[in-house]
Structure formats: C-alpha cells, structure tokens
Length: 476
Ligand SMILES: Cc1ncc(COP(=O)(O)O)c(C=O)c1O
Image (cartoon, rainbow, N blue to C red; front, side, top):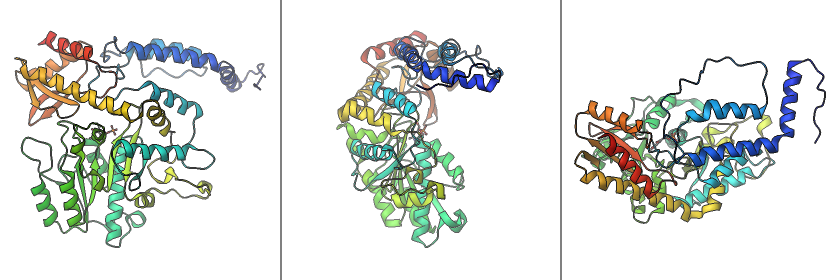
C-alpha cells in the first residue's frame, strides 16, 4: 500500500495526516482490537449492571487536544472512560422503552456498512439501492403486506416514518382538492384535520415539525379502559368535519397497553370520508409473524402509509426505521431533492427522494444480513418468545400479593404496579432499577403510576425471568 511517508514535517496537520495513514497500515490490528473490545462488551452484557447510574467520572467539558495519539490509543481511552459507564441495553434484561438488542448478523452487517461507507442515496454506481429495494420487499413479507402494493424507504426511526406519513398524507389530501402543498406550502390547505386517539409522542412532535401544530389535532375518544380508538367517536368526528383534507392516525400496537385499533373498520371510515389512513405499527407490524396474534393486524394492508422500526423488534442496531406506503409517488413528490449534480440516469429507486436525509447510511445492510442469517423463522422466534415472556411476568404479577397488573399483556409489554400511592411506587421503581438486574421505565396507565416492562430482545431467556422476579421481590 502507498503511504504518505514525509514524516520529517513540523506541521501539526501533516503529523495528524501521518497518524491516519499509520492507522491505515495498522487497520487489521485496529479492527481486531475493536472486535475484541466489542465482543467483551456484548458478551458481558448478561452480567453487568443493566444501567449505569453514576457517570460523573466522565467530564463532558474536557477540552479537545490539538494532537491526537492514534486509534489504538483512542480505543484504550474508550475502554477506560466510556465502556464502563454504558447501559447494557443490548442485554437480556433491559426492558425499557421498546429496545431491541442486536443479533450477531445485524451487528456484522452494521460494521460492514460502516466499513464500506456507501452514501445510500440511489442507484448511481452501487448496488446499495437494489439491496434496499429487496429489503423493503422482505419487510413487507415479514409484515404480511403485499409488496406489489407497498413500497417504501428506510429511515432513522419511527419518528421520521411518522413524519413522512403526515407529509405524504397532507400532499395527497391537497392533490385531491386541486392544491399543491409541496409547491405552495401548507397555507393552501389550512383546513387539514388530523384525527388521532392515542398518537405516540413522536407523532405529536411530528405535528409540530410539519407546522400542523402539536395541539391542533382532533382527539378521538378511546374505548373504556383501553388505548383503542372508539369507532363511534371517530365516525362522528369525521362526519362532523368539513375539512377538505383529513388524516386519520391509527395504532397497531400502542406503546403502553400494546392495543391495536380495528384497522378494517377504520379503513372503511377513511374510505367513506376521504381520509388518508396512517398506521403507527412501530413494533406491532411484526406480530404478523406470530399466528396467535397476526389477526390483530387485519386491515393494515388498506393503510395508505405505515410506520415501523427495525431497531425495535427486528433487533438491528440503531438507527433503522421503516416507512411503507401505497402512494410512493406522492412521497417522492414531497421528498424529491433536485440539483444538477444529483441527477442520475441509473435505473432504480432514488432513496434520496423518499425521505428526509439526502446523505444516508447503508441502513439496508444490517437488515439484509439478519434476514439472510435467520430467515423469517428467526424473527418469528423473537416475537413469539418476547410475547411469552411478557405473559409469564404478567402471570407472576397476577398472583403476587404485593403487585397488581395494570392491564393484561397482549404482546411484549407487561404493565404493573405495587401497593401504595404513586409516589411510593415511583420510589420503588428506582429501587428495582438500582438492583442493576433489570431496567424498566415508568408509565401512567388509566391515571395510575406503573412499571412498564417491554420485552424486545432476542437475548432474553427463561433464566432472565427468574432473575427479574428475584430482583423485584428483593426490594418489595
Ligand atoms: C408506537 C411507537 N411509535 C413511534 C415510536 C418512536 O420510535 P423511534 O424512537 O424509533 O423514533 C415508538 C417508540 O417507542 C413507538 O413505540
């Protein structure tokens, strides 16, 4: 390999360049040492404290030095200064949010994506766009969706996928009444009305980002004791609306109770009232792989757009969101990026025209690797096991004299609480998490404070449930 050899220079920037070329010569060793470090962390995630509660040892205000010391030295620093202060969120007992682990194949794909560092904008000079196209088709297969009707794009997460749903939905609504929001701005459709019963926090944020306004959606009632859309209320509100543009946000797996809307009935209402149907199925889409639960998704193939995520239940590393739509040309109208230097004659999808980012990571590769390595059955195994684990914890809570289930686990989430008031339970959650054996997040359900355990990792096994129950018992 040709390497810059002028080492006699006194210039600090020349010396810095030498460091980089030195590192290139040592790349094999660097990757092996990085692999060893990563391997140790990933394997150790079973036994380390699930979250780190004191990272005061790390000083964010420390100034950057002018001179670096090369990658091997930086690796040693990362090992000492950063790795001991991390959460074991890839481990089996991290039950916070909806946090998937990383399967070995997805990890390998992600590393490869970094090493080959394609800018996954489109088909110009690289197969990456064709791989993304194949992955989108395979995702449709996993979600039980017809890939001849749905197309899409990989995003940074469900938040951005929800954003694309709003943007494409608004454009479609405008086109139906002869106005062009893409060209002329949201002001040409001032009477757009968004209907939602249980929008995820990310959707509310997206309402702000799109300029619709986070308080400007029509709140639809939920069924008593549930997070599911009340169809009668939705029907009445759609009927009463004289807005020219209507978007209905439905849920396939709410983040708390994992409730599913009756998507067939909502699709019927949307058809009757000319509304765009967006379904947030950030993790719920993949219950299509569990024959005991796949029926929850009936009607989802009639959605105009669907949000899902790879970094949740598919256990690929952050970040990887999924957006699917039956109206890809509407999305491309809103997201196209035109400049002479971006023009391409190459055949294939230009993903630059389907999402927020122009420059994009080769996000399809970790998914592709995981799909190749484990097939549909591998993903089905994760989904089924996590649902069984949530049910197992739920059954234990139900018979526990000091605990109370807040709702019956339907999917991968168990929500429960303890005796005592909300403040006492808040303190108890702190204590449970402080055991270091598991991590749960707080929630409010039907007005009560609770603990939310979301099973989303391929690594969780029966013995982890034993550890989880023992840890909870130890502080009750
Ligand atoms: C139903 C639902 N929608 C959207 C999101 C936002 O996902 P992300 O963090 O990938 O943007 C989540 C995250 O938990 C979710 O559960």
